[in-house]
Length: 509
Image (tube, rainbow, N blue to C red; front, side, top):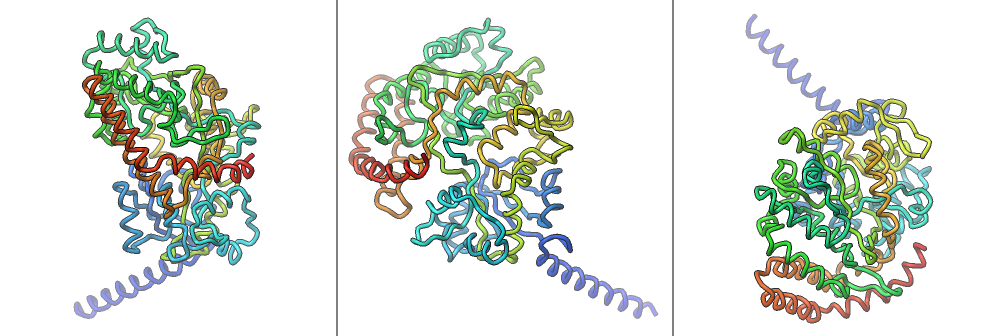
């Protein structure tokens, strides 16, 4: 009898396991209504604050689409390249880099073909298609993703409340202790750094991560992006007439102890942690929620601490925005259910899906305000003030489809009004020029190789210039930088970009 019971139990276990596996297999074919499809997604951002499809927003997206994700976050910037080389890919890849390699039929499904087969009612905006096709090197009309965070110059003019641009986050409580000295010009900042260094010797005056020295570049009139434009002609940023002055200024920061050499070896998260742990007075940031939420985290270390936004401007300031979009979601040829994947993306690219991902549930987390910006619930605002709490509760990190205006409005509408007022002061200095981004050389072209070599060389050479110990050393490094740029082919690169500029200027204007 005991043996029979054991055999029956074992048989039941096998049958149950088979039934579960069969159910899982069947559910992977569902596209909503009858079950939940689980797909794998690689998030190619090692800095991403989450690697889990959990929280109010993802769970609501799953309710509305029938799709959930098994998420893997990149460990570094090389992982996706290795995955592409080996062919070991998940169902979907969310990335802002290597888009040219993802945009090919041997790697990914063409969105237009999936749309024709499964979602023929999805009418994709032609400008979004054009932006995606910039990455297609196969000479056909296919597109393999749609890039988020894009708006045309006219859209920014008509309804843009602000932009995510380079700014500086400062300890507001320390500014108060210093008597709130001026901080709006380059001269002001040099004086402020000296004051902080003298009065707070245990604090690093300025730290930086991914945003680098962008605010100071802009104040000098040097593009914080790769290219600038003057009198209708594009130039690589080191050819700005003010580039040397900018490097001299930052070299003085180093030689006077306002920045540390060790900062260059830190990841963005580790560099940011210096400020969040009350080890620095200021850090590079952007004009969204960071200047507010950083202070909430610093206050855990220093209860009286808070942070604020600081602008460094001059008559020459110009915030270039040449982006043709940020990140895209590729549906790889490894996907088990391309129908579910494209139907998911169709929902995300609706206004409903975009706002849900960024703002939460309409009528619960937000309602629309009179200024066409969301008004958030108290629960949302309370969580938003503490990034780790917000990420765990709501997990609003899935900007698969939001345009730049929707994303900015969602982030800033949850802040005290003073932040939006500050960010709007930046708008007169903003230059929306997607044609500069579109005209950059194609992957695999000789000019793209030149650009890649220049980017790598300049990154290393700039560091040497900033960390030079004296004027003679600085001059040697700067002259080498400019000479090497000529040797690599900066003149050929600029000529190539300018030859393509009229076509793309006409497309976007």
